[in-house]
Image (tube, rainbow, N blue to C red; front, side, top):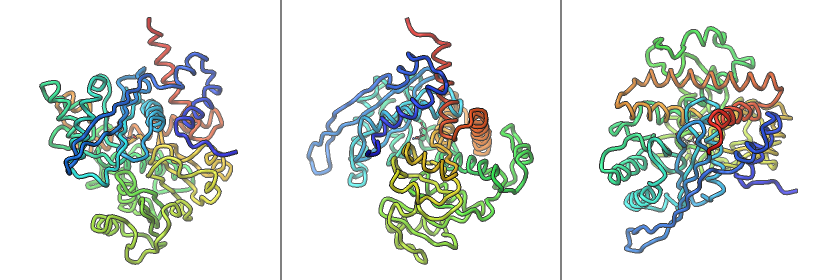
Length: 444
Ligand code: GLU
């Protein structure tokens, strides 16, 4: 039988699996299997050569029972409605698993941003924003960066939405530049959150720097100062061997944060290919190399790898930080990591999940492992709404508090229900969304 690779079908399968375990009411289960609202827009953009080009974009609001919809906007040639639906479902579970007051949404535009000028990207972003403006807003649905979108994209969205309203609306997006109401720590947040949960998972095995109690007491997010320069949580990775697939916002910063704390990053990759050096890569130098050549490949002193070979490198922690469907039934058996921390959304298929589980590999699922991004988005939104700004330390401490609690909630569920971490995370999340629906009741 061929493996299911449609991300939305996969998202539905993942939900179906826990609906039974949670004894979810049939009607609620059915309600949660589909997005609440979907908008498809086809719109023209003036290109630099004078041509007018038609683009297609989507905004899917999956569920808003727990609060306004929240989720990024992706620019990629493979964007499809089903992909956006899946990503919106995963946002719903993600915000629930970390307990922040949002529902889930996602957006995407089919385009190749690598072949577009800044001017073309700006005009496309502004027109797309205008097209989806009736359904977004600080109380409705708050976009953020995702694959191939960044703080500049968010600034254009914020400005366009503000022009339509006639006044500045910083709370309409998160991941903005600092000058227009962005939050300190937002750019690194996905990677930092991932680092926090990896640290928790390592600690649970035989990894020791200080006891879990000591670590938690030492830095709760309640205003305890961290040692100077140590916004990461006062610990060291002590030569943990790490491989990272994807060298965008999540992957490159995760590699940098973990290597700064003593982890040994032996392999990284981007869409063009990977590199391996068993003695450890100098991540600052790899970042410079990528900035000047456009790829990590060809880095001095490292061996070049095929793009997906990085997944099969022997390591303690593997961080897939690229796209969906990277670990499938074809390569799952070749994974040699002890822990897989999903910084990407949907990198592991359900069949691969089963294989990894049987091999005794701990998978920290995407909805937990990459929830640091949306968590600091929540902090940014709160700051934007109040026009009041927090220190970076404050942001990072609060992030740590939320990530550690979510990790505990999930592993607690795994222990009581004797399930793997993805199932445990889904059980926590889906139950919270279902509870919100039950409390609110069905209108009318
Ligand atoms: N795109 C990120 C994610 O997949 C961040 C979403 C957000 O901050 O709203 O979680």
